[in-house]
Image (cartoon, rainbow, N blue to C red; front, top):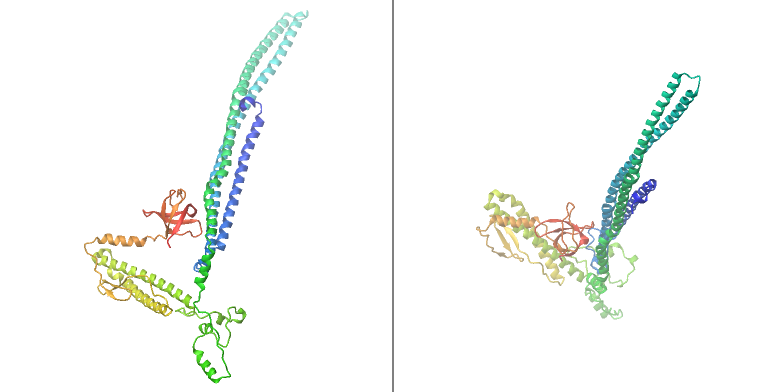
Amino acid sequence: MDWGTELWDQYDIIEKHTQSGLELVEKYVKFVKERTEIEQNYAKQLRNLSKKYNLKRGSKDEPECRFSSYQSFLDILNEMNDYAGQRELIAENMMMNICIDLTKYLQELKQERKTYLSEAKKAQQSLESTYKQLDSSKKRFEREWREAERAAQYAEKTDQDINATKADVEKAKQQAHMRAHVAEECKNDYAAQLQKYNKEQNQFYFNDMPLIFNKLQDMDERRVRKLAQGYILFSDTEKHVMPIIGKCLEGITKAGTNVNERNDSMAVIEQNKSGFERPGDVEFEDYSQGINRASSDSSLGTPKGPMDLLGKNRSKNFWLFSKKSKFTPERSMPTVTEDFAHLPPEQRRKRLQQKLEEIAKELQKEVDQSEALGKMKDVYEKNPQMGDPASLASQISQTSQNIERLRGELNKYETWLAEAGGRGETLRYRSHTFNNNGAHDVYSPDGAHSDESTPDASQAIYAEFDDDFEEEELTAPIGKCTAMYNFPGASEGTISMQEGEVLAVVEEDKGDGWTRVRRNNGDEGYIPTSYVTITLNK
């Protein structure tokens, strides 16, 4: 069944129905736009919430950050940030795949409908014009026929009139004959116009208008089908990101299961254990016996308990739970010293060991820099066109000074650690200094000199030079990641990846939902953090 056959006489109904259909598409587009605004606002609020409760820069080294409960909370904030990114993705896809697409399609439908209605109006106007011609010929035929009858009656009356002359009778007959001829012509014209109109009317009702109505029906059915696809996309857009949202929620669940109350308790002990012994019994001082008093006075120099260890006045009692109001800022905050002597023994040893490790790492970095400068100088000396060896003198001198300074600090902290009862073990390193000829000498950690052979001149100098500096130009990876989903990487600055692909992590997510990665071939770019599982180097 089609509109051209069943609704041949319902032009107004069809026009109204098609207009109503287009208005429904417009209404749905507005609905989806408002939904995307809700999603965007929701994502923005989630990001702001995560940012509000996340750690500030420089506070990641706070003692609380070592607790699993605190780390899990940070993991939840990161997962919420990724979750917000998925809500933004929903809004973006709905806008692109539904709103923009349907709006463009709607404009095409409006133009198509306008064309069909214009064709219908032209056909209607053509039929009306033909009908006017038919009506005009009909009225003329009617008028001329009456005039012919009147002329015939007059001729007959004149012929019967005895007073009329023969000329009058002949004239009346000629007039009647002429009128009859004109009436006959009008009759034939009316018959031709009637035939023409009937033909056009048949064409109008059985061909032209049914064809236009069927075109409008096809257009309306395509509109309904397109709108139905938009309804499905409304659901599929969210279904597409549900696996990733599920991963975010699984991450939150995992964060809860990763909390270990026992480990947190051990961390509290690790961070705050003083290393002091519990105070011993207070001796009885008998002032009735002079000798006892003398021996008691002589024992003041020997530490008996925490009052001596903490630098307290012996005349005051030692309490575990002191009233905060009785402490002045000078008493509650001991002066911080370079050797951490203000800390309890256990904490002092830990801080000294930590400081030693930091100095050793910094020293190793300077040693590596020294080696690189030495290689550069060798290359410049053998290949002057690549650079002037003298230009490296200031850098070599500065690096040597830094190495000597760090070595001195290393020895100083090792001495303090030994005094505190710890082990002075630091990272192994090789220290290079430079003689006047530009050759570099090797020193062991204890400062003893050792010889190291110079590079063989037959080696590929250019290759060695390039390899060394290519490695310095590339940022060292901080971990690796595995793609859970395909990512096209169509936007500028992004990189494509396939599900299961392993990439090197170069830069962590800064809170915007993107992580910078690198392939083995050196290609770098950003990928959505929520699309991968990341393992950072410890």
